[in-house]
Image (cartoon, rainbow, N blue to C red; front, side):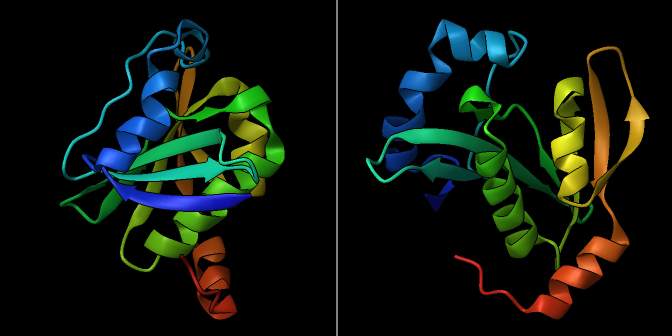
Amino acid sequence: MKIIKLKGQDKELYSLVGPLVMNSEVQTYNLNYPFKTGPGYIWFVAVDKESVVAGFMPVKPEGNKRAKINNYYVAGDNEEVFSALLEEIVCTLSTDYEIESITQLRHIPVFEKAGFYTALSWKKYVKMRMSEKKKEEEGADEKECI
């Protein structure tokens, strides 16, 4: 699996995720909430060996030094894909931003394994944040991001 990092209005992004974000099954996966993008977004897209999109997570860096994951998709809730996407997001952004996620309840354990904790709960979602301890560990590993 390969993680591709694209800007929010990159033409390649539309060809990769366009068929998915317009798919009713993917929209249902996202609890019928629309996917968003724009020039300020960074999309992390997981593709398999056959260049089929296995999942994606758009991230919006904000002026308050926060980067927010919201409205993501991972085919079959594949934990390996979730882990790869989250690892790359943390590697790429954690030194400059506090990473937050609006996470579906069923995905809390996957985000917790990646070092997130629940900061706020709603009926269908939770707001999660990257723990400071995890950020420090990531910095110490000095992993090279894409």
